[in-house]
Amino acid sequence: MAMSPMVRTKAELKLHGIIHRVVERYHPRSKKYPFGCKEDLLNIIDLLAFDNGIVGIQVCGTDWKDHQRKIMEDEKENAFTWLENGGRLEVWGWRSLKKKRGGKAKYWSPRIADVSIIQGELYWEERV
Image (cartoon, helix red, strand yellow):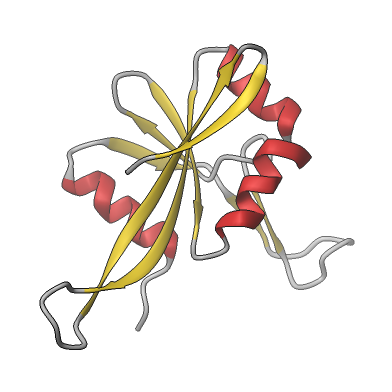
C-alpha cells in the first residue's frame, strides 16, 4: 500500500526527533461537500512542528505549483498573519526519484520550500 505525503512527512519528522501534530481536520459530511472535505489551519497548514520555534507545514505530493499559488496568492493574508506572529512556514512536496547508481530502484524525497516575508512581500525559497 502506498504511503500518503502526510505519512511520509510525519515519518521524516519523527526520524529527526521533531515533535509534531496534525492540525488538518476531515469533515465527513457538509452541505457544500456531501462526501466530506479536509480543512487546514488557516487554510494553509496541515501539520505543526516544534523545531527551534513553531513551524507550520503544508504537505503535498507532486502538485507543487497548486500549493505555491494557494499560499502566495489565494491565502496570502493568512500566510502573512502566520509569519508576522512568529511562525515559520514550510511546504513539503514528495516526489519519487531514481537512485543514481543505475537500475530501476526509486526512493521518496521531500522537496521543501520556506515561505517568508521580505520587504513586505511573501518570498518563496526552495531548499537545495
